[in-house]
Length: 348
Image 1: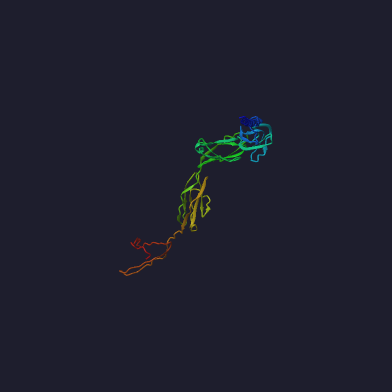
Image 2: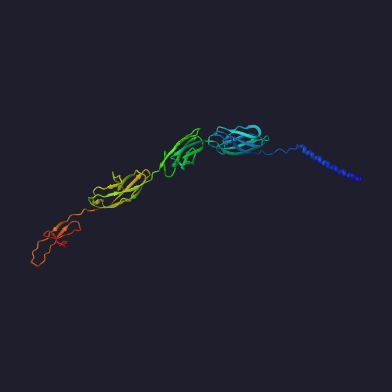
């Protein structure tokens, strides 16, 4: 029994020693986890963004200093001075920025061990606006307005014809409206943004002119030499129209109305082609060509062989004939004692 008791005491002593050793290890760290071996940067963001400035904030898992690289490209180009305060909540103000501009930035922190950390993002500074109205509202409603110059953008006018471009940087711009079926006065407007909003870029719309379309083409004509030929055209579209008649593709001086009458024709005009160009502010159209046929003037008949007198015996017949020149066909009417003879209508 005594031997067994000593064995039990030995076991208890071993157990007690092991517990004390464990207690010593715990008390060596004062009950806290070991310090982190890396520098972590989180919650990187831009805040309180204005037209010309922004705050950049972030968090580190251990105290560290603060600085920011920034610029309008991902290569940055600008850096803030290093704030040596060892903090876990960081805030750096970027000032002197350009309005309406995208900035890229990278935050930098270094802890007391020299461990570096970085994190990046981007933000847009506030900008200025260009605005105006298109009248009347029927033309302005739904009109597309294009912005060019310092920036390229497109906006759609609302039901009252109002439009706005926002977030613009300082610079020169051009505003151009467009709406199918309408023309605008002025056609476009330029404006300069320089530290303030620009308003009053207004436009007045009117129905766009319709190019002419010919509804009645000039008709071909046949005349006799010495007569005149007349041609006319009818067109639809937005008035007023201008007209220019052509002969064989060459403009005829003074022939500038919807109809044209030639001078007295000659056989040299036979086969001439006449067309007209109809124009307005929206365009022009050329008619089909009309053909002028000119026939030679007829020549009156001239008798070249007169009927010859005849002597016959009662009961015999007498025959008469005549020969004539002139423009065929010739017609004949024989007479007896100046009275037309029925059916006597040939040359003999």
